[in-house]
Amino acid sequence: MLDTHVASIDPAHALLWGAEAGVRKLVVPMTTTTSDSASVVRIDRHMRASFVAYSDFITSLPDPHYQLRMPIRVVVDQDDDHYLVGDDVFMRYGVGSTVAEAKLDYSCALLDYYDELREDPDKLSPDLSRDLELLQGRITVTQS
Image 1 (cartoon, one colour):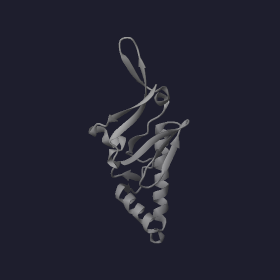
Image 2 (cartoon, one colour; image 1 turned 180 degrees about the vertical axis):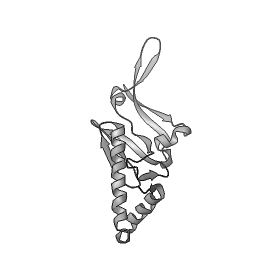
Image 3 (cartoon, helix red, strand yellow; image 1 turned 135 degrees about the horizontal axis):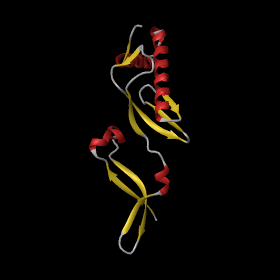
Image 4 (cartoon, one colour; image 1 turned 45 degrees about the horizontal axis):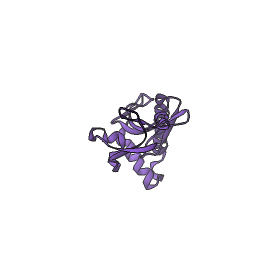
C-alpha cells in the first residue's frame, strides 16, 4: 500500500530544506505493511534510490587571483550519472561525475561570468550590472 507521510521540518535544518521559501513540511511516499505484532513503515524503494537536492556552499575559487569574501550558497542535485551544482542568483551551474567536480565546474563558470561582466561594465543591462555589483561584493581580485 503506497501512502504519504508529512513530516515537520526542524527549524535548525530549515535552510537545508528551503524554509526560507516557505517550505515547512516534507511529504515522503511510504509503504505500510502489517505483521502479526506491529505495523512496519518504510520509505518506498523508489524514493530510497532517488537523490534529494540539498544546499551547500562554495567557499573558495580555483584561481588564486580571486578570493571569496563570503561563501556562495548553491544547490546540489543529481541527474542520471552526473551531479549538478547551481545557484538562483547568478543563474550559473556546474556539472561533474562527483559533487566536488560539479562544484569546481560551477566555480569556473562563475569566474568566467564575472570576468565577462568586468570587460565592459558601461554596456551592461541593469540586471547584468546588478550581478556585477553583487559579484564585486563577494569576490576580491588580488594582484600577482
